[in-house]
Length: 134
View 1: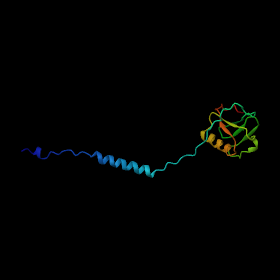
View 2: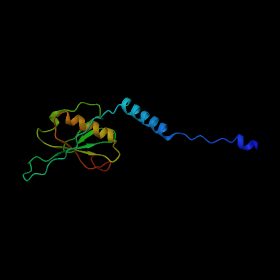
View 3: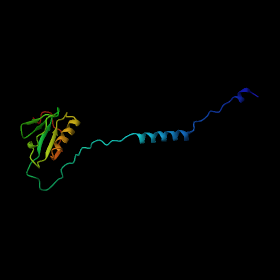
């Protein structure tokens, strides 16, 4: 007898069943221990089209790159940290925010929330060029 026949080994195979069990256990562990927080949702409801439009046109507000709000019809500028005076807006008059082209999304959402906190009907308008609102 030859010595090579005595010492031949069979390769052991990894059991796939045990490996799949471990993967599913890890998957369930991570699913149960992680938390899925729902981020604060922003309401982007657009106004509903009606036959009889109100006589009051919308108040246009330009949102600058630095976060300042400029009322188009009046010569009023509100800084990003200044409190917004609700008296600047007529009751029931819709407000349209027109962000400048390079305004950040965070500043747009912050200003939308500031104006909605005053119980104003706020809608996001289209983006305008940087100097168009001045």
